[in-house]
Image 1 (cartoon, helix red, strand yellow):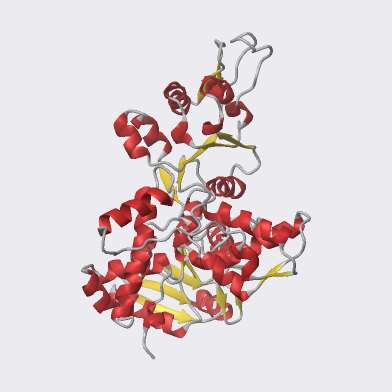
Image 2 (spheres, rainbow, N blue to C red; image 1 turned 120 degrees about the vertical axis):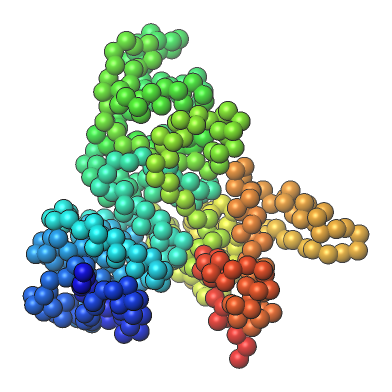
Amino acid sequence: MNRKVLLVEDDNAIAIVIRAALEDEGFTVEATDSVAGRDRLLAKSAYDVMLTDVMLTDGDGLETLGAVRAAWPAMPVIVLSAQNTLDTAVRATGGGAFEYFPKPFDLEELVRATRQAVQRRTGGNHDDSDPTESLPLIGRSQPMQEVYRLITRVLQNDLTVLVLGESGTGKELVAEAIHQLGRRKAGPFVAVNAAAIPRELIESELFGHEKGAFTGATARNIGKFEQANGGTLFLDEIGDMPAEAQTRLLRALQSGRIRRVGGNEEIAVDVRIVSATNRELGPMIASGAFREDLYYRLNVVPIRLPPLRDRVGDVEPLARHFLRRAALEGLPQRSLSAEAVRLLTAQLWRGNVRELQNVVYRAALLAREDEIDAAAIADLLEPASSLKIGGESESVDAEIARWLAGAGFPDGTLYHAALAEFERPLFRHALERTLGNQLKAAQVLGINRNTLRKRLAELEIRPEDFVSG
């Protein structure tokens, strides 16, 4: 069967690579680099799938994507983009795209998605809405692209989402994005932090209570489930929820009905659940501290937020974003010097985005000049921990043990946090030894080259920086 692909891509090198890969799979590929060329080819021929970049030689390919989907509803569209923001991902899926790939993308994954698009093509099921609300999710780094893709995949359904990540990574912002851009955006968004509520009050907070249900219950209270009816309920720090409340929460999720504390009436509620935790729930399940059946109810779609140290390329845009926000909130208008940016980027940020925001806000308040310099930033930073390996009297094990004891990683994050800090200098050392040769560096490390390439991209380490020259 001759399967035809329309490729709309203005980067000739990328177009050549994609065409070759698709033709190897048996596709017939016709290519153009413009919106006008796309429309001309669509008018002349039918295609099984279209792959399109966003920024083309004569305009934005997403602006008319809704019209293309309306005219050719049976043709799946896969969007490719170097404009790697949540807004771009949402515009793509909101315009009816079958899939969205930020650049750089995995070529094998793109080919696989093209095959799936052809196999699963259906007629007319699309949404021409173009949600473009401004959201406080900042970053174009590779680790954030998977977050954006997962967010767009849950906007038009009510699947429960579990957001995982260290404290300060922005888990509530993900929940807000899912609500604001999803089909429940007209309903309420209600957030509750399980760790901030006393154990004896958590069930009343979630499900409400009747007058006289317990000492101090002088009036009926409407709980968070009822407040969120028709919208989204965000359950933060779900790992800190006591066992009794876990049982009632599971029952509510299974039945779609709740009962106020001290009440007899069952009340139907229609809420979407997004939960979050900075703890690893697996060990808690093994120890009996968290219900396994509740975990599977909550963890239908997991979204893991990367720590800031794994997306260092996002530090500068985040810092500038926070400066703009600080000015809108009444603090002085400031800018950042190049040296200040370098210092911010070099930090480990164990408090993640929240810690960065605090430093930027304090700098905006306290800096003596309109341009914040490195000295002003340095005065506000926590002393960096250092790992000194070697010495005559102590073993490497002892040095590492002492460093770990003072590192202050939150419970549930130790493994991934420590591993990331060890990997970065390890990979840099291998690249320095091999002058940036990834194949040789992988051999030095004793790992697969694809594994090395993936981790270098995630840690934003550029092999070309190590090439002698």
